[in-house]
Image 1 (cartoon, one colour):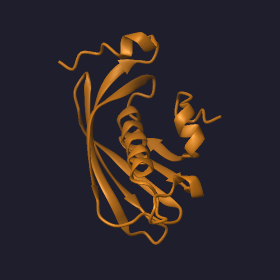
Image 2: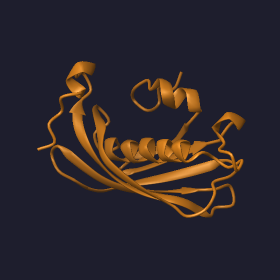
Image 3: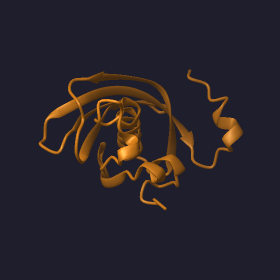
Length: 140
């Protein structure tokens, strides 16, 4: 069970993401895809790549206030080349307001080549918010 993210996230635990760094607006996660995480070309499925980037960017957003949670408002991902081997994603908090975080990050393959890049916007939410409240988070 992965507790180092500040919350237990079953999907993150299932995929096996490892938190490497989480402080001062920066984050780094590592992930070794399993055979069931591949696509029909035998490279890491785009959904797994996007999930890793989403968690990495969310972690960067939370790194300046680890008691807060975040929910993804929007995310754009550009795929540059196939992602193979053990993957490393690095995220950065570019700007924040009292309620929003603006982030960017890059995913690298085992050889250090950039495979995907993403930007995302997150809404800060109190960690003790009930799950039903998260479905009604205002974006203003």
